[in-house]
Image 1 (cartoon, rainbow, N blue to C red):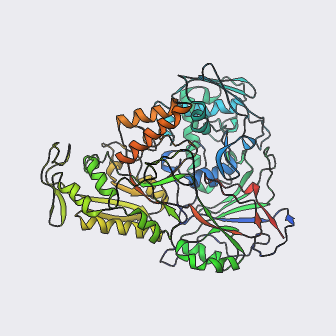
Image 2: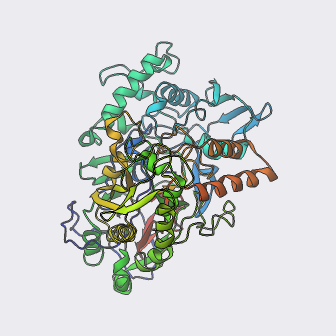
Image 3: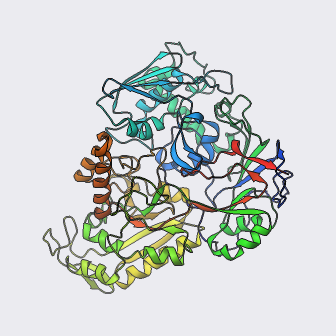
Length: 614
């Protein structure tokens, strides 16, 4: 469940130069229409990054400002593996064969969890063991408010104690019984063993042994100092490939080159314990400044092995196929939305009125946006529980529009609650908390004049936001649009308190909403529970908190009932403004590159599975 960036959007109208020097021909990665299936050992595969959204963070204990699927699944995961790996042959399920540990064992009435690691190796020769999980938990406990996935009362707050009971055995005691499926999919999925080579407060500090009683992470102050050191190192993008810290990996790949523009070069980790071992000799991620820049390379130089087709270039699909590519739309398990800032000291009280959110939702013509701007490669989002890909979680409410597009009804909602168009803009003329008044906290004379920052470089996003602005203008709601790169939008729209200077943002759209990973069960505690670090708009509802809590402990036949109650409430209470979700990208994969499909529903890329044929 990350703030996922959508690569699928339309081609930029501007002609922008490619950021990376990727014009040279790749020897083994050039596309081919050959029907031969002789497997080639080696070769270089080139993967196209999304425009203006390069990796920005390397340390797995990621903060909210850097939280994205780009960082998590197209960068960090190549080098540093979570305890459990998700996605199996394109299916949305756990993959124990690719995981660092066996399936967890629950006992003591589901209040004790025992994890047996497999004994994989770090690239420095040390074993990925239980002490590495203790290191992760110590850093997390001491720095949890810095972590993007922290929700007060949930992980790690719901863990009473943890310890290594053997070299490869890790045991957690929980504060109460939880659904084993939920705890495995949404809590254990967040564990990331960390190498003790990182357990230091400076580059010159010695590395502690597994039994060192004075290891820095064993005290709160020490763990905070270690986090400070590692976080600072992670902000130094130019040293990613040279800092010895990041060369200690347990994943299949090791970084050898990285530019601040985002060009990343990986080679196989010779000591990777998983299977399959990488066949490629090198894997390269290429940055682009726009969809048009990527398409120009894709359709001409044959340099890209795994790229994408901008939606407005769909008529060029046959041309790209002729260049030796296979067209493979990529769906992920997520939904799309625009957060509104409930804590903004000026307009927050307006957003807290449900009728206002209903009116804004009725200005989003989801079906038409999918048809016109996304060319049919998308689906409406009506709740936080996705309807595509097909899954066992969604219900009829999530599949049905709750607030159909209707500017006329949106205007009626506003004018019936104390608003009137004055000088072309909706103005509160009846302040107060009555049924026909503007609502608590909304001042007399306040106007519906909102600032919305959205992702740059995507024509479909511009088209959608322009359509939204136009529909709003017709009913007296002014939407002031501005653009920023993906990383700029997600850092701009972070959760905040009214007293913070950074709490001035009002509405945002980073172009991709939410995907459920590493919280793979769509229960909502990380996204919409009060105080959740990823609850960007600071939505708070006692009813929602109660319903979310029920999804975490219900089991058996009650589990789906609890999830239904949650998704039905969220579909109607509108914690965000829902907008269409799209295929994460319209992939174009070189016909001589194999192993890249089926594509992960969680947006992982696994180039260790890829190989070329001739």
